[in-house]
Length: 212
Ligand code: GRF
Image (cartoon, rainbow, N blue to C red):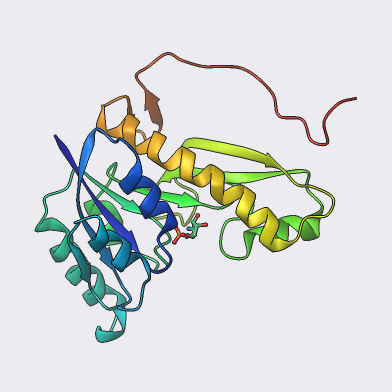
């Protein structure tokens, strides 16, 4: 069975969604760069080894990345999933896990890469927003896209209500993406494209506001 290591920095709700999904892989460990990440307790409650590799204890990015890779490689994972992991990883780290490192981002990439995605979407008045699971490359938040979910932006939305609507979709698409990976249904090609090895392509549109 394939093995997954999850990296977190905080709340860990995406990690929890992965722990509670019926994935066809084993979650070998959860690693946080912060000792106070709430997600650590959730992982332990699920009986998953929960480790801390504190970025603050390392002089620079390279030594943190090296320590993190060492901690990950103990578990010999097939895939490494970033789930609210708030550190930028260096080029060496990203190259080491090419095709095996996945991230979830709270916007419809390539729109709104970076931080404060919901506030920026509200400010721009977009009517459709969402979330993206993608392979991690050196180009921050711009790696090849595996799956996206779109949600409507409603007239009375605040940053909180919009974030909650997007988050509930994150909890659906991240387990789906990891399942595909673990079942060899999706992979990153040599050319850096996402290859789908299954054929399902449902076609429907989300229109927001909805048509009369
Ligand atoms: C999520 O919105 C995720 O997309 C982003 O950071 C947030 C983490 O939330 N990268 P959680 O820790 O998974 O609850």
